[in-house]
Amino acid sequence: MTNFYKNSAAALCAVLMSAGFSSCSDKDDEPELETKYFSIEGAEYRSGEQPEGDAAIGSVQCNDRALAGGMNFISISSPEECEKFFVSVEGVDGYLEYASQPDENASSSNRYSYLIPVMYSSELGDDITMVLSARTISGIYTEAVEKHIEFVESMEGDLAINLTFENEKDVDLHLICPNGLHIYYGNRGGDVYDENGDLLGSFGLDHDSNAACSIDGLNNENIVIPEQFVMNGEYTVVVDMYRNCDSSIPTDWLIVARYKGNIIPTLTGRNPARGTYRAGAGNGDYTVVMTFKINDADGQLPDPTVDGSRAGGDYETLLGIGLGNERSVRIGNGIFTLKGSAMSESEAAKVRNHINEIAD
Image (cartoon, rainbow, N blue to C red; front, top):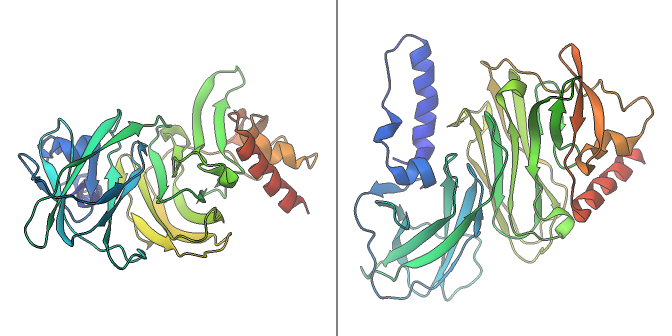
């Protein structure tokens, strides 16, 4: 059983315990591979040594960088039809056995193409070496292929939404919060300070990958909200192809939403959610992926309708928080200072283009 199902079970477990049931199974009993590194939906954990042989597996591609709680696509193009894949982490006991699923978007007719969706643990905290091998339908085992994955630091918080996409395009993640606050590349959030200049915490969009097709290759975006800012109410998650940097190829994407480390049950849509931008997809689809509700939080986010920058109609100040500016915001009954982090030149250009669009 993978973390996809276990995390859903954990959410149910919390409900049962709050209703008076005694206990649920201990996570310490789960394999280290899945709790600390990654899981694959539909895969089975096997203890012992990963199977491998001498046959060539073909071409194996994946994102060589990872965020805690994020995802990855392993893309395989093989001269042989494969029945199963085996995926592990070098130096960690056991492996995941995954029944092959053909990649429906592959265009080659003389090779077999597969796509394996990997979900990283929220406990991931270091570089890893991922190891992949396969068994063909003839029962032949392939060589093991190693892929070094670099861990990328990111914000941490009770509420975390992660988007990953297969190739180098500008696909954006949006979150609409219960009070109407819209977190995305044009309103990224930042650091919140009280009247004494003390940092209360940070929230918002941590990574805006491949902004305006200035390629960084991360192919991941995440929105993180720590406990003190998580509000009760309904949240909406949106994915948007801001700019299709290479319209000749399709792009698979995955989104997962977690609260306190567990996958969140949805009101609409699925979690994790998966979709595909077909070859030739245009820009600006703004697709609602899922909605969910949080009922046990005690935090507050900045009020999107009341702040110290709107009176003058200065759109650069209003949305330029991500450019490294600062502004006054209302949280509850208090006024605080929100400071954005500095952006790259391409990110700044993307935000300014958006500012011009809404100003016209």
